[in-house]
Length: 333
Image (tube, rainbow, N blue to C red; front, side):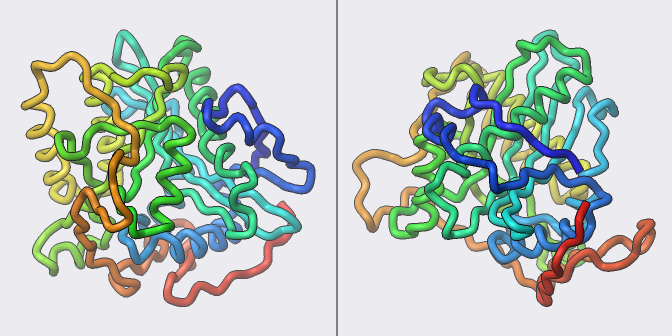
């Protein structure tokens, strides 16, 4: 179990106020596969927030990702995964998980930091923790770049999948405003649509007639280039390719096909462009009833996402069952 530090320089320009947060009473922990009981507690909280929305992978999949070795190159890319947990008196008050996808085959290597899920207990919000949850993954990316012997100046791009703007949903607006203040920007989803894979179990996908990707907005922070309102077309393509490459490690090829087709159709039209405009995550001139992008509910249920450990795993004990989220107290690590 590794303990994390605070690097103020990694905070987004709009998150610099978070630098004053007093961490003396908190533990910041990077999980490993040895921390199975703490993983159970973390996954239970993640399920409550993201499970029924169809935005959370099964527990065994996330647990296996913790073993990714960034020195193992897969199709020109390095992969690493991390879950950060913030504890106060052994209580989980915040968490963040993220993947680091580093392209090593390019003459201009870059690292895509995929921000998967973030959760903060309600009474600890608006105190500065959220800014650090967006900044700490940069340390993991920097560690991967160093281990891969890549140039220290390699470009790092943070990418967060978010539900589309809908002014009548306060919780969604709170998240979007938080990322907007941190100077995350987005490609216009009306011209560059993005979707997350269908995270249901393969049997449920097949029985329902095929995969149903989840349409989301992709918010980006280009480290050191937050002030720019454009990004190169090739850079945008590599961000999405890297994220889909990461998902393809654990999701069936046929279930990824709709995503790759959407990507190819979208960017084949844009191939004549050199630069793409980046937008503010919250459109201007909207009212409280406006919903800019249509909702497409995902048929996710507790029953079709029973995330138990694989029978051929070394430990066949279920990590967590979301319909019975019993949380157990942790011992010392």
